[in-house]
Length: 78
Ligand SMILES: [Zn+2]
Image (cartoon, rainbow, N blue to C red; front, side, top):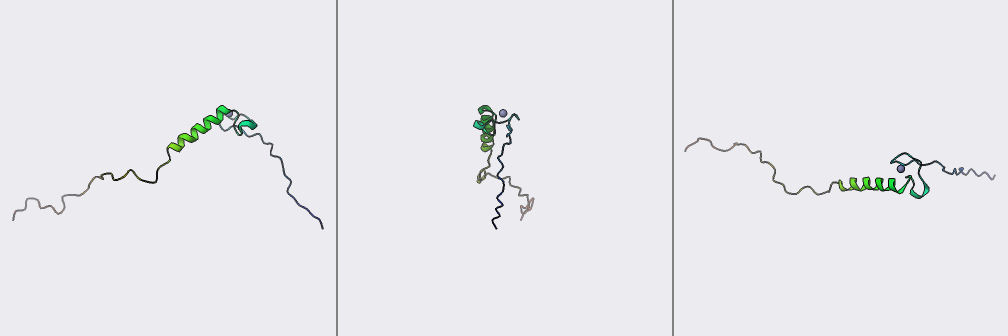
C-alpha cells in the first residue's frame, strides 16, 4: 500500500492586483504594480502609524470639578 495522497501543489499564478490602482502587480513590487504604488501604500501605512494611540493618557489634566454648593452653609449665621 503505497498510497501517497500528497496535495497537489498548485502554482499560484493569480495575478495579484495592485491594491492601490487595481492593475496587475509585477513580481518586483508585488502585490503592487509599481514602486510608486508601493510607496503610496507605505505612506498610508505610516500615516496611520502616527495615529496609534499611546497607552498612557494625556496625563494629569485638571478635570472640571463638579462639586456643587452642597455642604456650604449659605446665609447661615451662628
Ligand atoms: Zn498600482
